[in-house]
Every structure is written in structure tokens, then in C-alpha cells.
Image (cartoon, rainbow, N blue to C red; front, side):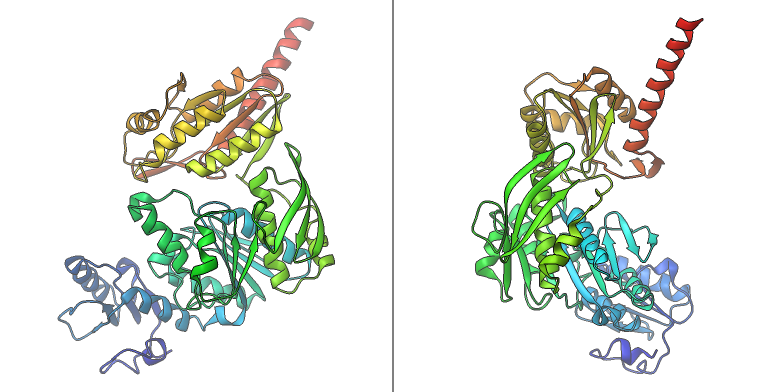
Length: 486
């Protein structure tokens, strides 16, 4: 492919017929024939990386600065340019499939999962991109970010299209919107689940975070919006967008709503009204927030053309999302593993647990290092208000002191609580304290297979720790029985 096909709207000087072998945004990965895009807004860093890219074999470099070398192209907006160039290079594959974007602070992964399951059960070939990874036609691969960079995205779209995928359901994060990773993709539908506090280490204020989220919902990016009207910030789209909107909720009048909602540790059941299509839902997904996620998914699938019967058939036996309120019976007490890592996420998980048991609720959690510090005391406050016992531990401390992170959480707490920085020990301690019928919430990491300490990722998984606990308890019980027999 020649350069003028990739950068059709730019002044290419003498490079328009240059053959391009690849598009890159990492200067260290450049090879012969590649075009390199320097995404840095820092002139010195950009020039340094451009030089490194050329040294590694790049044919031409693109940035927002005058690099002072003939093999360079200056553009006004390099991130937008990179996103659209990646799309062109990989054959505009996203234009050949139905594209569904799921955005919001919480619920993106679960809603994507439910949409994908309903479509698959109705014969659609579906691709999923998000926090848990990339999934299509039985294939899986890791996803470097909730919404990956444009080169990864469009390469993945091409792989999906070549493998027969008809519909892509992907999570769209606020970072991706702000960094223009999704520019050039014309989504058929965009879902907004909610907007609550998170990522203020990056966006600084809730107003800036909200503005970024809402900016995605216009005809530049999507053809139609699906919005949760029960969320105050999301509801602003009713008056602020230039695309048609369909709504869902439990409290405000909406196009899609639920009645006779009954949630327990075994799952949920309710009747969904989806624009007058009636769907009786019996689901293993737990909690009111998963009722919201299910309503969003049903509305999306109806917008894509599924009938009332297809919606009902598709909802049959939806499997839980790994790391999202997964319940494990531990000899009559319940361990619940959930990804909740924001004040609203913590509130929803504990509120769901409180509705499901009249016994005690324990919670084990920490907060990620080098991330939004403002949410830490809020999470501590929510935890002690809704749980009977709180144990503070490590999450992914990264480059911060684990004790300092705990101190930030404790700033919002007034009641006695436990601190055990070793996460595995913290889980065991709370499971030991719990009695039959009690619920132990293990929050923050979900299905993650690692723990980030310093600059390294160490193998770790909350599920594994609960299973080890069960195994050790069983082994101890068997040993005691053996001793009695002897």
C-alpha cells in the first residue's frame, strides 16, 4: 500500500508513492518500510523518538513538529492522523462489520459480554474487545488496554473480518476517547452505562471526565445512542446529543425497563419490557447493576434487529463474566470475587450483597498505585458503611508505598478495621473469620492474573487464592479424620 492511500488528506511532499509495510507508534518496534507516528506532545521527546524510528528502519516519520530531516511529515493532529491511517492500512475492516461501543465508568465488560452472548446464541459471529481480552470464533488473545491503541485495534478488526466476524462489541474508555484511539470508526450504536468517579489522576476533575465521556456520543462517532437514564450524568445526553437515543432504566421512564426484579446469590430473575417486547429473564448474573447491564444488552440487540423470541432465546443461560460478582461456595459461606475498584463499583457490589443475605458481610480490598488518589478515602467510607468487617490490603501498588495507599483509604474511615498487606493472607483471614451464610467480598482485581509491585508483574489471582484455601481446608479436614481413625 502506498503512502497517499494511508494519509490522503496530508501534504506528502515527495512521499506519496512510498510503499508502506507497516504503521507504528512505538519507535523501538520500527522496521524497514514502516511509517512511524510520534504521538508525544513534547517536542524533545518526539524528535528523539523520530530519530530512533528512522535508525531502526522507518521510511518516514509523522509528528506535530518540524523534525529537520527530509524523511518527515508534519501534521496538525498526529493522534487523529494515526487512528485514521491505521484504519486505512488495515483495509477499513471496521466499515464492513456492525460496530457496537460500550462506554461508561462501570458495567462495560459485563454489558459487552451479555450482548455478545445474546448475538452468538442467535447465530451471529461476534468479536469482543475489552478489559478481559479479545475473543472471536473460539480465539482469544490478551488486550493491552481496555480500548487498545489504533494500530492494535485495526489489525484486530482485520483479523476478525477475515475470520468471518459480523459484529464487533468493544469497550470504549474515556482515555481512548481523549487520546482519539477510536477516531475514524463509525459505530452503529454507542452505549453509555453511567459516569461516576474514576481516573481523576488523568482527567483531574469530574467535569473534565464527564465532558470527555459525553463527547463520544455524537454523529462524528456513532449513529445512535443507548443511554441509562437513571444515571444523572448520563441523562444529560437527552439534551446534548445530535444522534437518536434509546433509553433504559429502573427508576425513570424509559424505552427498556424491568419489573418483578428478584436478585439473590444464585442469580436474578425479572421481566424486561424492551420497547413493548416482553422478555422473561432468569440469569446467573447477580445484583441490581447486572439488571441494568442486561437491559442495556437487550436494547442493543433489539436495535440490531433481534425479535422478541430471539431476545428471549439469547438470554437463556448467560454465563457470568469472569471476575464480575463470581460466587464461590466455601463450606456454606460465600466468597465473591469482583473487579469493583471505584466508589460506585464498591457501593453496587456491597449493596447487592447486603440484599442477598441477613448474615455478616466481609470485604477485602485495596487501591491501585499511581492512579486516582481521590477515590481512596471514598472507597474506605463506602466499605465501612455497607460491610460489617473491612480488611485493607494490596491491590496493584505499582510504584507507590502500599502503606501510603492504605493510609489514603483510612482517611475516609472511622470504624475499626483490619490491615493485612499480603493479599493472599488477607483473603484467608477473612474467610477464616466468616461463618455459614456470611459473604466475603474480594474486590478490585477480578480475573487479573498478576499483581503489579514496583515495575514488575507477579503471578497472582484471587480465584486461585480462594481455591487454595478450599483445598487446604479440605486437606486439613481429611487429615483430622484420618487421625481420629488411627
